[in-house]
Every structure is written in structure tokens, then in C-alpha cells.
Image (tube, rainbow, N blue to C red; front, top):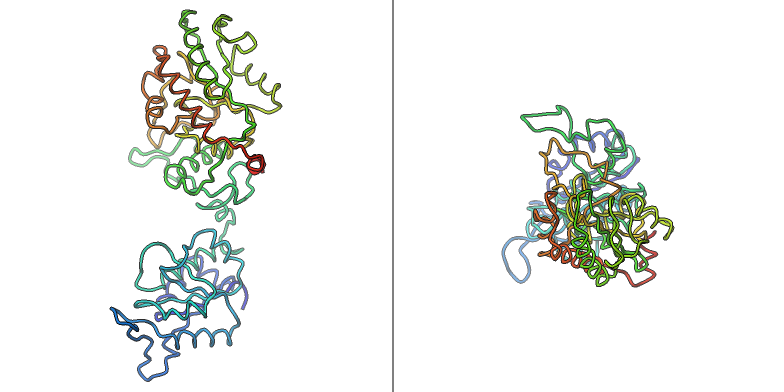
Length: 452
């Protein structure tokens, strides 16, 4: 016998054996990559009726599986084929998940004890098994379905069982980091990105265009973003609660577009945003392609730039790291993080993944090109690729706090037809910076942890 071995103890061995005759696990059994043996508790009953259950001590409904045939079956198989890691399948056990599957994938022999009725005499749990496992917070008629689920989840991780080993590495709940490809528990787990195949259009429902264009870098970026979106929308508990290192420089950019704006109006904008930036612990910078703000607005000439590219170049020279540029409010072709936690996770999982680099929040103060257009919501089949972030921006950030989150997405905050209300913009900035401040780390060890 070679490969990993599973010993299933059950009252219904034919049900287990029948399922395992098909699929990839069945092929793995035929190739001796995995072996599965079923042992019937009734073969170890001591009376002529092959009784394996009895009424519970203390009274109550149902029957309880007797300890003698269960222990006798365990001891017989151990003597026949060798010792095993014994697992009792019970709703009262810790939950089985992908981390447990990965742990069990390196165990050479695994015994799975399936109960029935009200369960197995608890002395088996106390003295004759190594651990207990449960599929989840629900009750089945017996442990056979749980045993089959565990066998399939564990066996598919063994070398040679899957045709392409990358399939397991990129599954939902895998630990593979999306940016570097190196697995680490520090990165948490992801839900897998969506999959599509031929035909490219079915009853008016298309496939995202980025998958049809043939650019592998674009496809990888799209898949990374989709995995991030799905996980934060459906299973945020899978992601680590990242912190923003205390040393991370924080900037707010008042981004003025090509349109004309009265200098007094621009000065009012800058004054309001400068106050919000100071309160939130950020430095204000101004980007204005056509005009410089007057010194009286409180922003020195050295803090004013013609473009985001010029600003990024100066910050890189000043801090020795490429800044991370984030739009404040929804923007076309950029993944929208609704809250500081998903924003930090997205920045950590993409690009250089360096959360200690300068973080720059870019606020459009009037029609500023791509930044000011409403976020597109095309049909699923016609999603625009997100591979070319506008003007070097990596993501968009909408604070999770109720009032500010709604404010960031109102037409007045993203309508290119006119300037945003100054007071509303200042409030948005204040809440966004407060959220980021709440996730600041003050512990140097946490900084080192985030950079590993």
C-alpha cells in the first residue's frame, strides 16, 4: 500500500465506497496515490443481532452507539494495517476548514469515525481518538457525509491527485499571497476570483472583456482585484486586520482640473482642506495644471505641483519610496475600498505591498478628468479592465462611516459639471483621515510584522 490512507469506520460502508468509485479521488485510489478502507462497526458486535446501540443512561430520546464495537473496530484495524490519526466526526468538534485540510494532508494514515443516532458513547471521544472535527454548525444523520468531505478536501492536496497542482494553490481559502505568490499565514485567505469559459456571450450575458484581450498582466491584475472584492464583500473575516505603520507619511492632495476657477474660490477650498488635513495628521499638497495658488492660501510654492506625476516624483525623492496614490471617492477603472481596512489590505496585496510608503489621498476639487467622472457600473459581461489606473492612482477610497460614505458617492461629490461643495469635501476628508488614523500602529513590532 502506498500514498495516504483513510480508514472510515461506519455503519454504511457501501455508501462510502460507492461515492469514492468516481471522480478524481476514485482515480487517485486506482493509481494508489490514496487508499480508502471501510470498516463496519457491526462486524464487531458481540450478540447474534449485531447490536451496536443502546438507550442512553439517564434517559432521553434516541439511541447511543455502544463503546465496545467502536473500540474493537479501532483496535482490529490498528493491528491489521498499523496506527492512525483517529478523528471523531461530531457537531461538537472544532470546525474543519482549509487550514485543517492542509495539516491533515501530510498525515500518512487517518481514521474517521462516523457516528449515528445520538452519537457515540463519549468515552470514545475522551480516551480513544486524537481529535474531533465538525463540518459546521448543523447536524447530519451520520458522519459519512463529513468523512467523504474530509477525504476529498485532504486528498486533493496530495501530490499527483489533481492534474494541475496550481489549482489547489489558487483555490478559495488558499494562503497564496496575490502579489508575491508566496504563501504566509500573515496574508490570511482569499475567495477565488470568478471563472468564465466559452461561449463569450450567452443570451446577452458576456464575459469581462479583459479576459478576452490576451494581456496576461491585465488578467492577473483583474483576478487579483476580483478576489479582493469578493472576499471583502462576502467573507471579510478571512482577511487580516492590517494597520497603517506609525511612520507612514500621510498626504492630502487638492486636485484642481483644467477648468477655470476664481482664485478666491480656490483659496477657500485650500483653506478648508488645509484645516481638515492638519486635524487628521496629513500634509496638504495642491495639484493644479494651469494655475498656482496664492501664498495667502496657506500653501507654500514648494507644496504646489503641476501634475500628480510631479508630486509623486518629489515624494519619492523625499521619502525614498514610491508613494501610494488613492482617489478619495469613487473613480473610473479603480477598485473602490469602502473603508480603511479593505483599502490597506488592497494596498498590501498589490504592487510592492509596502504600507510604510507615503499614502496620498487625492481629492478632485473640480472637473479633474478621470477622477471626477462617475464610477462606471457596466453589465457583468462588459466590465472594463481595471489595468490602467487613471494618472497613477491604485485605488479609490470611500470611508466606511455612514454619513461620509454616502457623501463620497453623492452626485455632488463626483459630478464633473461643477465644483464640489467645500464644506462637504472637508467633512469627507476629515472622516477619511479619522478612519486611517484609527488604524495607525504605534507599536514598532507591528510595523515589522506588516513589512514581512
